[in-house]
Image 1 (cartoon, rainbow, N blue to C red):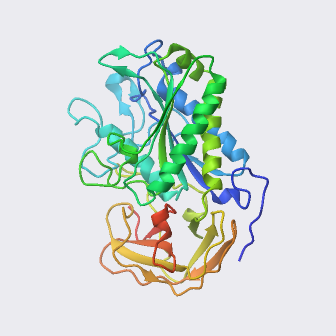
Image 2: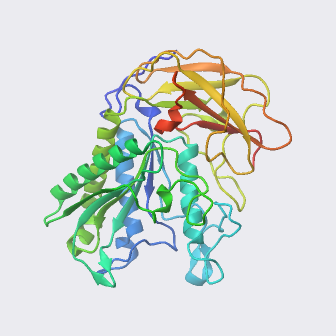
Image 3: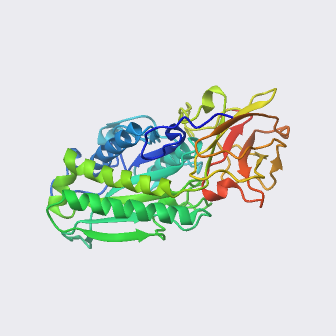
Length: 402
């Protein structure tokens, strides 16, 4: 057992580096500027520029408190490609991330193909980083039938379609309240609090997995929100969000919401494989090719698997926890849901306190032969409930690379 290192972090004092937050600056790349700015539609005042500025400020706030941060982008680029010379876009070649057989952009490509592949890549990055939280940052433009409503507002979305809906709802509530408060202090004009919304069927990144083109093949595994932190339909807010103080105010609001949420999260776990590609807090590196960029680490071909389990909640773990695993054949990067059957590893799990860890040597059941297999590894409580049902992301390892 490894004691909690302890820290002065106001986000998670016992062991802040064990907490992973994925920040998703909405839009990005040459082809996706986000909503048009009705007053000054140029790159410096685009939605993609505003969300990146807010994301970088939020990253700095969290990192200063010891939290591990993963950005889906840290510049004006796209994970799924952005190469379209007719519009002067010279990014990377397009990738078919969601596996529907289509990739790219242009008149011969179905609408939304590029967007769905891009958002699928961001989902995959968060899932394989095994993030505690996914925060997608956006800026709204309140218009209808071409009419611009000169209103400044904040609204936060989540989805109630996952088992961890209560956690997502609580995260949405804390983020919404704190962004409204922080932006209100920075603004010299009246703003609206439009509250939270748990049913937004058009928000691809928040949807559960499905086979329909409008759904991701692999949905997010953790509590997630999409925060429309502000709106450019009011010129004064458009101007504020283009400044460092305005972006820092939005970032401070989201940061405070994350702090409030994590302080109330009693039960959580992180599972790390102690292999080079599976170090705690390290985002997966993109694989070459024209398909999905992010794939899980490989399970050792022989010998025991070395794991680190960390209590990332605010309460001690109960007695009777089990480590459970199962295999399932898949040509996709990783599994969208747990295998039908999970088998206990037969290893005693201590009642870890907040921030404490234990390193274990585990022998997984032998994978079925003949095809690429993916292992799903999670903690299960004495009542049979998996920690993955609460939004603690299961570890996945594969027998083969793409």
